[in-house]
Every structure is written in structure tokens, then in C-alpha cells.
Amino acid sequence: MPHVLVAGAGPVGLTTAVLLAEAGMTVEVFEAADTIGRQPKASTFHPPTLDLLHRVGLAEPLIAQGLKAPVHQHRDRERGLVANFDHAHLADDTGFPFRLQAEQHKLCELLLDRLGDRVRFRHRVLGVTQDERGVFACVEGPDGPMVAQGDHLVDAGGASGAVRQALGIGFEGFTYEDRYLVLLTRFPFEDHLPGLENVNYISDPDEYVVLLRAPDAWRVLFPVREEIRDPAVWERMLQSVVPSPTPYEVLHHQLYFVHQRVAERFKQGRVLLIGDAAHVNSPIGGMGMNNGIHDAFALVPALKSGDPAALGSWAEQRRRVALDYVRLITDRNARALGEKDPAQRLESQRELAAVAADPVRARAHLLDSSMLNAVRGQGLLPC
Ligand SMILES: Cc1cc2nc3c(=O)[nH]c(=O)nc-3n(C[C@H](O)[C@H](O)[C@H](O)COP(=O)(O)OP(=O)(O)OC[C@H]3O[C@@H](n4cnc5c(N)ncnc54)[C@H](O)[C@@H]3O)c2cc1C
Image 1 (cartoon, helix red, strand yellow):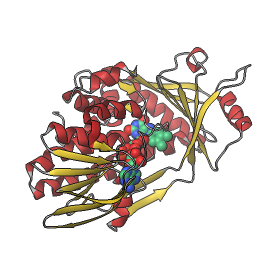
Image 2: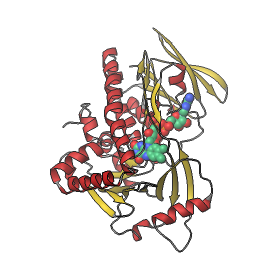
Image 3: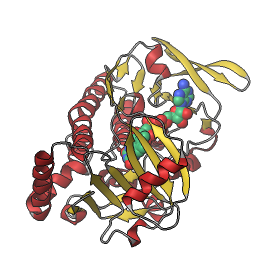
Image 4: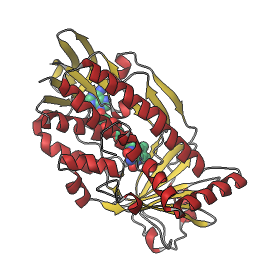
């Protein structure tokens, strides 16, 4: 059985490591930070991700710590409710016909529990060489530099991509002009916007909003052109969503650059790129981490097979999903939310409402937005 090195203990690296261990392979995870990341990033788990996590007994404990979102909602700042998409239409397609709202670090903690000391924090992978004997990762740890040897290295080190860069693999695509400001607050939006769901996309030509409820707080995402650190400006932005006589309490704020980029190849010899190290996309639609977890579920059987052709197919297929599916849908989502042309905006909102009202078209829409079509095309889950 191969011995596999994993760079990065984010949700994708840790999922990969648990699957490798479950499949009987030995694994070592190197994580540059001294703990699991807790920034407010992914909070949405899609149904097929839960179907896959269920296979290794992780869906249920995650669900126990999250909020179910059976419906996701489209709104317009001026007009109000546009459409509700109900995952009940997917009742025959998945064992989990809802989105799960749970902070990504909760999955990381569950995975970490299974891995114990196979994860080494404060160990940064600096570079990698390889030959017919194996792969050699140069790792900087608290006791100085070391070389770790394995049969493969899985680069799950996120978008910064130290390994990808060391290998000279391009990361093609673009960066949006808009960055995303995420504000966390416990303000009870649900008491002020009748019919609000746990996942809400609120379109507006000037300042759209994504309102996501996670167990610990609401996450309010705004597009911005520059970093905003002034609490008075956050207050103005939040008051524009729901006016409140008392000031909002902002628990946390974070600014993110937003990219659409896919690595030019996901495999170079014994090194496999996975998760954000291989692809980054707009977070509108909640697909990045989910897609990375799907990468992991597809990768481990290919690694276990020991067949280089299986790894080659994995790399090709996962790259096609990132380009043809995730990039396409998330870019469309982001642009639709901020559509400036009033006639076009009205037209697409009418279309969304018509799709949501028709069970056949609603199911077809949800098969895409829930990523079921992405995993079915890959044979990860039965059709
Ligand atoms: C605002 C926002 C909201 C989002 N919402 C969603 C959502 O709802 N659903 C969804 O699916 N996706 C969402 N995403 C995307 C999601 O957060 C990422 O796709 C996900 O974090 C990728 O996981 P990863 O494990 O590949 O990388 P990361 O989470 O970036 O983890 C990489 C890890 O590698 C470590 N590392 C980096 N370099 C090295 C090195 N050289 N050596 C060792 N370790 C290293 C890092 O410290 C980090 O711990 C969102 C993103 C943003 C910004």
C-alpha cells in the first residue's frame, strides 16, 4: 500500500487523509499553521457531500452540529422574495435533501479526531522533488528543516499553492474586481424579514447581499471594492439590509479576494493537486470546499488502485468539473446577483420564479445547484 504525504490540514487535506487511512494506506499530514483554521469561509455543505461523508460515518455528527437548510431563497432588495428552491424535489436523488449550514472548521475537527498524531501542525511544506523511488517533501518544522518521503504527495495547501508554484504549474483564470466583506452578527434577521430561509441570495445592482445562517451567527456577505475597516460603514451596510434601532454588534469581519482559477494540471508525476490548491472560485453557491471534498473521494480509490492511468483519469476528470461545472455556475451566480440592467434583472428573476414553481424544472435546477450532477458525472454516486 502506498505511503501518502498530505500538505495542508484544511477540510480537503483532512478528508483526504481520513479516506486514505480508512482505505488502509499510511498517511502523514503537514500543516503550516499551529491549529485548524477558523476564518469564516465555507458554511454550506451540499447533499452529495453529505451522501459521501455518510459513507465514512461523518455526515451524522456534522449534521448534529449544523442547521438544515431545506430551502434556499432568492430575493431582490427592492422587490423582496423572488423564488424559493426546495430540496424536497431531490428526495429521490439523495439521502440528504437539504443544504447543511455548518462552519467548515467543525468538519475539520471531526476529521482531526480520527487522525490524531498523523497531523503535524507547524510543519510547512516548502518544496518537493521526485524520482522513481518516491516523492521527497522539504518540510520546515519547529525543530528545523526535514525531508519526508512518500509514494505520493497530495497538495491540499489551499490557494497560496506553495507546492503548485514549486512545480511551476500555472493557475490560470482571473480575479474579480469585487472583494467580499464578510460580517458576522447574531442580529436575528429571521425575525425581521418574513419567510427568510437559512440561505438567502439578495440581488441588487449596487450592493447585493448574501445572508447565510450558521449555528454560531449570521454571515452577511457584501461585495466591496476596497478594504473597509470602519465600523460606522459596516453599520450603514447592515442597516440597509434591516433597519435596527439599536446598533448591530459585529462579532467578526473578514475580507476576501475572489478568484476563478484552475491549475493547468492536477497531477505532476507523483504529486496530486486537490481542493483550493487546484481550483478556486467565487463562493456564491458554496461550491469550493464541496468540490474539494469530492476531489478527495474520487482520488483515494485511484491512489489505492496503484494504476497510474487511474490517477491520470482522476486528474483530467476533476479538472473538467472545476472548469465546466463549478467555474461556470459560480461565475453565473455572482454576476446574476449584481446584474445592473433593470430589464435583464427582472427577466432573470421572472425566469427563476418560473423554474422554482415547476417541479420538473426546479429539480433540474437543484441537481446543478446542489452539485449532484457534478458527482454523478464522475461516477462518485449512483444516478
Ligand atoms: C467567504 C467564503 C465563503 C465560502 N463559502 C463556501 C461554502 O459555503 N461552501 C463551499 O463549499 N466553499 C466555500 N468557500 C470556499 C472554501 O472555503 C474553500 O474552498 C476551502 O476552504 C478549501 O479547502 P482546502 O482544504 O482546499 O484549503 P484551505 O481551507 O485553504 O486549507 C489549506 C490548509 O493548508 C495550509 N497550508 C498552506 N500552505 C501550506 C504549506 N506550504 N504547507 C503546509 N500547510 C500549508 C493552510 O494553513 C490551511 O490550513 C468559501 C470561501 C470564502 C472565502
